[in-house]
Image 1 (tube, helix red, strand yellow):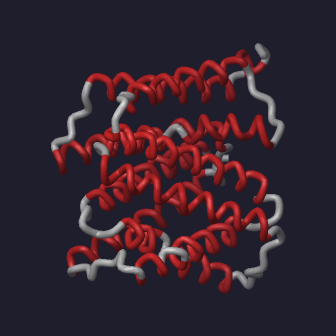
Image 2: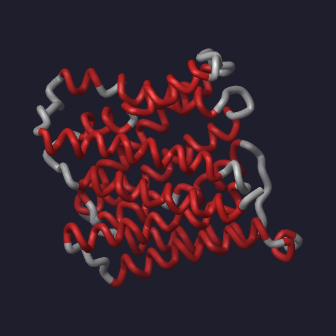
Length: 286
């Protein structure tokens, strides 16, 4: 395996995800459903073309699991896009980056996987960090942050299902049907009035959302061909850095002290989780 190539690909994926998030935030006048529709539009044709070119089957071996992946996935994207439109870009990305910790929790609850005590510490630290980012208040202003955290829970649910679904279907089939479901499921909402005719500039940005999301998924998938996910996951947090830079440059969104503290705690939790799953010294201490 070529770990350096895997790291480079995952960093590129993180940059593309940051571009996608910044693009979503840059068109606040475009309805949520319309942005979600465009998000996976290119993925339908790219993955579909790949399946046809390689003469693979479109048939799923576990339609029930695939349907669950699609539903949780699209709800996660909707929650994430909503939080991006209401929060500082860095805060929305930080909360969404809680998903790896919820994957660990769900893997224990539903897949009966075992974790070590240091992963438990990592989850606790990350949850405390999320609390700093959310800044709990007893009024409606906390709702976007709660939805941002919900996007991480929904994404983690989807990722957990994928971990089991990969035993039945190929990544291409999974991505194809997720992309297809994401776009088609938005059409009724757009017909009901949640659609704005985009200007040429808007259309370019919507296509950029789709292109950057597709590139991010492709780079991430290929990254894991060169090294195990446990060795690469930590580099996905570069998305936070890229998104923070975009937020500062484009909207003068300078993170406050609480968000910085929360972000550092979430990254620290991710680092502890990374070390505990890759170090033999930690693995022996359960």
